[in-house]
Structures are given as structure tokens and as C-alpha cells.
Amino acid sequence: MKRPEQLSILFAASEAAPFAKEGGLGDVVGALPKYLARLGHDVRVVIPRYYSVNREKYGLRLLPGTLVVPMGIIGHMYCGVYEGRLPGCDVPIYFLEHEQFYGRSGLYQQDGQGYLDNDNRFVFLSKASLELCKMLDFHPDVIHAHDWHTGIIPALLNTTYLHDRFVGDAASLLTLHNMQHQGNFYPGLMEVLGIGWKHFTYLELEKDDQVNLLKGGIYHATLLNTVSEGYAREIQTPEYGWGLETVVRERATDLYGILNGVDYEEWNPATDPFIAAKFSPRNMKGKAICKSDLQATIGLPQRPDVPLFGVVSRMVKQKGTDILAEAIHRILAMDVQFVMVGNGEPWAHFYFGDIAAKYPEKFACFIGYDEALAHKVEAGADFFVMPSSFEPCGLNQMYSLAYGTPPIVRATGGLVDSVENFDEAALTGTGFKYWQHSATALFDTVGWAAYTFYNKPKGLAALRRNGMKQRFTWEDAAAKYDGLYRQAVRRRRGAEYYRNRFGE
Image 1 (cartoon, rainbow, N blue to C red):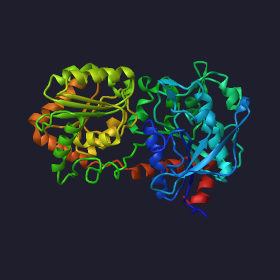
Image 2 (image 1 turned 90 degrees about the vertical axis):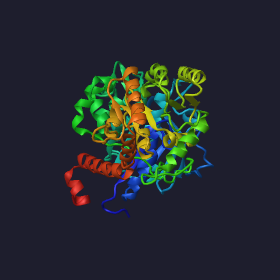
Image 3 (image 1 turned 120 degrees about the vertical axis):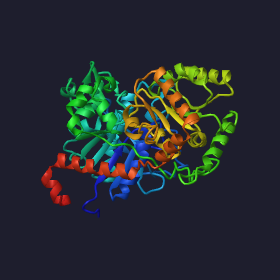
Image 4 (image 1 turned 60 degrees about the vertical axis):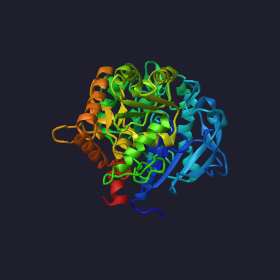
């Protein structure tokens, strides 16, 4: 018997850390439900069972029965359901087992090309998430959808599932993690959705004579949010709205920004098992040891007297990899060192590999992702570089602050919200910001940081101290989401229902 104040919440998403993750979406879905459960809510999560999700490793249990999913003109399709738990808690996570759609190596693409059936793969995920509630005898108060992959769920709730006894009265919250990717597909997808061609209009699902799943979600969701207040403002402009800014502006009064949190049990220099020496704001001696260890690990000279700049990032245009490539020769003309960890577009692998060969005393590059090395960069670098063209939230700048590694960021999205610009006179601020997305602006700001390292030791110490005092917790984020869920329930079911149930 659930407590009167408790909400039933279903997370429907395409990824969740640590099971399957390609970006910040996976971090949110893997972390936020744990903290909502601590508030007393009944939270369930559903994602696909990609073949990268090892059933034995995570102790997944096959539920009895088969899930039947109506796929419009295609007919009924079927899948098995595995049940597991999010690590470190009792939150159930359900995995949809469908070999045709998810039995492949990648989540969304292979060799840089999106799968040709991504339309059906994620319509299936959206519909199966709703049908799963019947199998579980679960009546969600709120269904929390994420990005275009499950963005159509609010439209389904308002149409074919409107009178469904399990989910028909569920409120919907759609989180916009990245507006660049919208789920644009051929018009015939309407026949698979099965919600009627009357919804294929410029006001709802149609954009440029295609079905736009994210647009449909934005139009139909009870409430919307992004992963920072800065990004919530930006997506209402042509520069960041990717053609949907008008739709977003029409829902502006229903749009909120909630900054993602950091798991400080994992990202804490006082307890981090991956780094060479522990340190804290009261005792920073270990940071110098971490710098020397990082230099040795990546093959750079162990020089304490030179500023070491770090990058851990996907090597793609959104992350400013092209701007960094343009500026790197000028940066390395200074007496600095630079380490880069990540993978992405093939040209970047070759380009920065060549840079490492040309400047072996100054530049090191690791192609791929290594968890231990990522922690070593955060702890051992003097500065962390994030030249993003846009950044809905960003997490590495928050990790950097926790490790006394002032971030150098372009002032966009969540980077604006989480980094305060350095004031040399007042010794305030937590990092270095620049506004114009250009190689020159990046070079100038890296130069400012290098100058601070060499000439302003008190300023650098203040930056480190100020940054390590910052906290961006999932507890804070969960409390804000709790408020949005309750507002959505009031909107969907009416104020009288809400008062009767919650006494508020």
C-alpha cells in the first residue's frame, strides 16, 4: 500500500547508465530514479535490452509471459521483458528483449550511420513502455519521456491510449536533452503510430513533410523541461532550436530548466580509487602527485612548472572539436602541456594523433574512453577545456570543479549556469568563460588561464578553492523534479483530484 504522498513514475528512455550509455541522457536515467525513490516515490525504468547489456553480469530475470505491442499497419509485434535493478538501490529497470530491433552492436548507429529502422525501433520502445504497465499491473501517475526516442509517448497518451485504464490518465513530462536530434522520418510512419492522419499537421507531428517525433512530444506533453536553465532559454532561439524554436516558444510557460546532478560518491578526490593520491580543499598536496602521475601515464614530461590542460570529450563538432583543432597549434606555441581523451569523428582521430606525433613533449592523445584515465585527467590537469558550440548541461565541468581543476568553457547552456567567471581583483569565480564560438576566443581564454598559472598563484588557489566548494547534487535535482511531477498531475487530472489525494 503506497503512502498518500507517493507518486508512481515510469521512466521510458533509450539508455541508462551503466547498462547502455552514449551521453548525458544515460547519466540522468541511471541516476535520477534512485534519488526520486529516496523521496518515497515508486519509480520504474524501461529501456531496450541491447546486446551490449549482459544479462548474466547484471543478474537480469526473465519475466513470465510475452509483451504484445500494437505497431499499426505492421501489426502486433512481441518481446520478452527482463527485470533488473539500478545499481545501489531497489529501483526496478525493465529491458525489452527484441532481437530484430535491439540485437545489434550499437544503440543508434553503426559506422557513423543511423540504423535505417530507427523509426520503428523507437516507436516500438514507446508503445512497449505503455503496454508494459499492463503486464506489471502498474498505474503510473507520471510517465517521464526523454528526447525523441520516447518523445512520442505524450502524443500516444493523448490519442490511442487516452482511455486506457492503466495509463490513460497519466501525466507526461518530456525532458529535452539535445534538440539537435529530433526523430525525423517519412510520412508513412503515421500508419505505424496509428494515431490518425489528422495529427500530421504543422501544429503537431509534421515538419518539412516528415513525421517529427520530438515535435509531437513537445506539442502534447503535459510539461517540458531541459537539463539546465540556460538551455531552456537557448532552445527558444533559432541558433539552438534546430527549427523547433517556434514550437518551444509556444510552450514556454510549461518549460522548465533543471540542472543535472553529480554523483559525488563516484567523483570525489578525497575517495577516488582511480587517482594516485587523495586530496581535499583542506589538503591539496595530493593534486600535485596526481599531475605527475597523469603526465607519466600519458607519456608527457613530468613537469610541475608547466600548466597542464585536459579534455575528456566526444570528438564531434558540438563539443567544439573543430575549434580546438584550429587553435591547437597556437596553444602549443606557449609553454603548456595538453592531454586529450575521447573518440568520435574519424578525421579528429587522425588529426590529433598527428598533433601528438608533432609535439610529443607537449600533447598526448588517447583515442577511446577509459574510466580510470578520465578520473586521472580530472584530478591531474590544472585546467579542463570544454569549447562546446552548445551544451545542454554538461557534467565534466562539474567534475572539474570538484577536483580543483578550473574549467575553461564557452558560455552556453549548462556551462553558463554552473561556472562563474574568474574575477582577478576580487578572487571570485570558479573558471574561465568566453562567449564567441571561435578558435581565437578559445586561444585567448586558454592564454588567460596559462597567464594565471604563471603569474597569479593566489588567483589559481582561489579558483581551486571556490570550485571545490560548489555542489550540484541529484538530491536538489530530484526535489525540483518532484515539484514538476506534482504540477503535471494537477494539470492532467485536475486540482480537485490532487487535493483529495494529497491534501495540498
